[in-house]
Image (cartoon, rainbow over all chains, first blue to last red; front, side, top):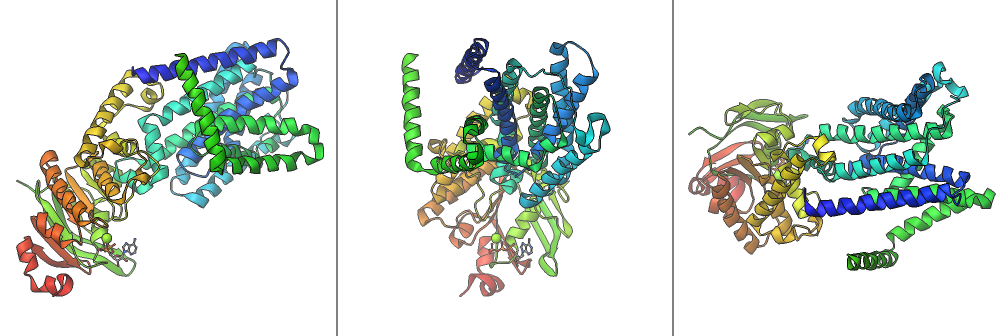
Length: 319
Length: 253
Ligand SMILES: Nc1ncnc2c1ncn2[C@@H]1O[C@H](COP(=O)(O)OP(=O)(O)OP(=O)(O)O)[C@@H](O)[C@H]1O
Ligand SMILES: [Mg+2]
């Protein structure tokens, strides 16, 4: 193994473990109460959704508007599984999550077939339609409650599960992007014709991007179902897809770290703004605009970079 | 020895326009071959057919005897035809090295699983790719720019990087579409030397489109001139320069 890679891996793992211990301790000691813990779980789930959407939107460069649909498939399939079986949660839940992911992956594969022939606006429309079709199918499926909703889903999404799976999603995405497959996916965003001329089977890598993205949307959906414990097709509308897309765009197309940060901020923020009641959405949009401006302001960015680099230097000095 | 490229009766229609008609081209191993003609003659269209971007309406294209008609561009690239573009097409937001790594993808085979779980095979192959990328960049002394974003390279260097990227697929035939366009005389001279050098180093044939007659006449061993998509003349630089039809339609004077 390459030395630099091993060092990076050690740092990443240390950050992950420390983060887990600190947050876990705060929950155990009651500093993070049940309400805040709920927000923390939603942060993990939204990180998974945002990072996975970034694979298609940021790295592959296709505007995809069906993420909520794939999320819905993962949510319903996993819930159907845990509700029908009565195994111990430790066995049942990971299998349910995996099944939710695989079901979404299959749906992602099916959607990718017509999507391969289309680009830009047309692709956006196809993915939007796919999301709506999934939602309307669910409305008419009586075994999962139809429009009335699907209740009594076990409360399995613990902090440990949500955190662990968010970490797996981030690491898998980073690893994909750093491989030859990830480079091929990015080359399609950069110039599809040049990618083909360089020997890249662009159709194959579009499918890989789509399917990877859909898989983790399904996984996120499974966690969501077992956190909310109640599902309704109305949760997975276009609004939900756009909400995730906003997180991707704000964090930066093609930046996994950015996705993690923006998913965190945009999940916590609306909760902090609850005090403003009527003006909540107004303040929320103002903050969105401010964040956008900050991202594109060179002076602010320079300040931020300087803070980061001095932090890194200190870190280096400690070694 | 048999030809690397054999094009027979090649033709294509765009709606009512017959952009290329009845064209034959034979490129020998290690040959430097020029394809010239006035603007809109159909030169780039020929390249697009050779690389599978357009499917020919009629005729056949063979690479070392193997039929290319109906093959996809990435398949043709892997079979041994590589190209550059008239309007530079780099992966602009990627580094110079990454641009080459993408075409070097053709030389490795580690799978998705190995890539995501970073198995030893992926490490070994990535390391080999990295080394070869730097080696290839040296052909144009671009190794010092390895970590520069492609879009930040000076124009002439961008054209050179495109050639390096094309070499990454280990082609048998390299197609260059106006490689000297926008270059100053010094850069053009360097390019001429480089093309000859890489022909020797990689033992490849080169088919190039170019409006710079000094370059074409200086390095090509054989030239085909087309006009309105049809053959006007074919021969050595000497023969082409003295052909009255070519002088009238293209060279002037
Ligand atoms: N996709 C297309 N659809 C319709 N017409 C096309 C297409 N591609 C090329 N043509 C036409 O085919 C003819 C040949 O174009 P081509 O680009 O091959 O010329 P060229 O010889 O490369 O010219 P230049 O020296 O200006 O690059 C032109 O009349 C052009 O308008
Ligand atoms: Mg042209």
